[in-house]
Length: 197
Image (cartoon, rainbow, N blue to C red; front, side):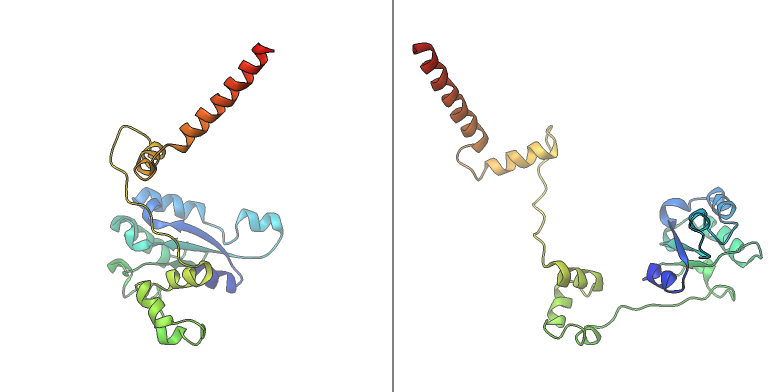
């Protein structure tokens, strides 16, 4: 949704996962230094005038010291590009600042989605998908996927070998060994016919 809103404003999104990259003051300093201009290099190469918008995803998972440094940058006059942040819970450092607008987005209710999908039981689908709209849309688009097999026991083998061992419980004879035996049998018959002639 964040990427769609940035693109609908005619901007080029620069997405960064804040949980993985925002760990310290140094990380924020590198971020600030790398985004001094409002246009990216790819925008300059293409020759368009699209401005960039920095998208910091999962900002609530980043370090609190990095969040404070990020707030300092956002309220200063040094920042030249817009910043869009996503989070599940708004960090305390971002609340009650006049330069930061908090927009809360709530997932739609099944009754609001039922008009979009009149041929499907949206209420039942919402129950099956735990009211996760992304899972609902994925199931409507691709169907229901199979459940993952139970985890294999810890052994000295690789996951692939463990899966073959697990499948052996359901098969009387190993199809690969049967095919190998048949192949060896046909080779043995061909060789014996060649030596007898």
